[in-house]
Image 1 (cartoon, rainbow, N blue to C red):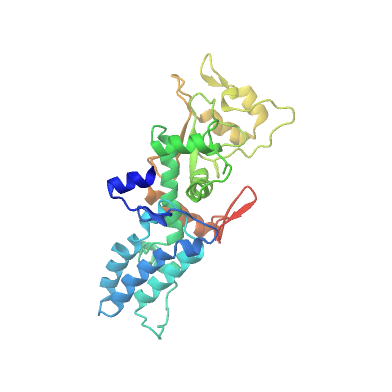
Image 2 (cartoon, rainbow, N blue to C red):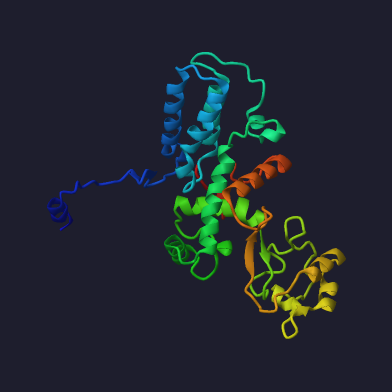
Length: 319
């Protein structure tokens, strides 16, 4: 029936689609082999430019406006292997320094320094792994805050039908796009986002990020034995809309109790809201996400267990 329909419509029948809308239709175990086409596109651009005489500012403009834009579409859907990102950055670095085939110029400044902002002595080149996570975190943020989107409805029905995006697990036989978005949630959203207290019914006191002036946004006080306090709503007098000060002072450390009591409580009992904590406006953007990852890398030296692999639920995905 399908063959007859294709013949009537004059559509070519193919057994397998290697790509769909410019993206891999199937991602196997070898991620580097699947995404090598990104590296090939970058190399073709750089190879053509190497034959031309270009000034240093000209190379900078071409790198920022053309080369670094090539993987953006792929990065918004998949987490590229760390080795592939480093190889692409190496090719760009050689082109920037004017190295030709068979020769290598001295690298007076590290590539990491060149990727710093200009006010810090760099040229503001983009680091691919951080930007990749920032692009994926945008997808996760959209899924979390836009329930009416088709992708949000499909992923929720498939992976977290009885919970929310922040509590979702990898599920059974997850595809690589979902695993990539979850990695961005772990590395970016969970660390840079925090809950804004409304009625307190969605915020877990001991596990969620909800103290805006605390490092990591989490409670440091240990949970007392036989304590049945679970959600922030358990700390609020809902009839008069104020904090239960005696209970809070009894359970938490003094400096944390003071922070909690200073948090405003909504009289209209609005629902709790998960907001972006890496910008003053509390509004998510890829730029603020990227700068958050860069800052974390400077402080911690690394930012993720995903530096070489996606790790989740005790399983290794990818090479």
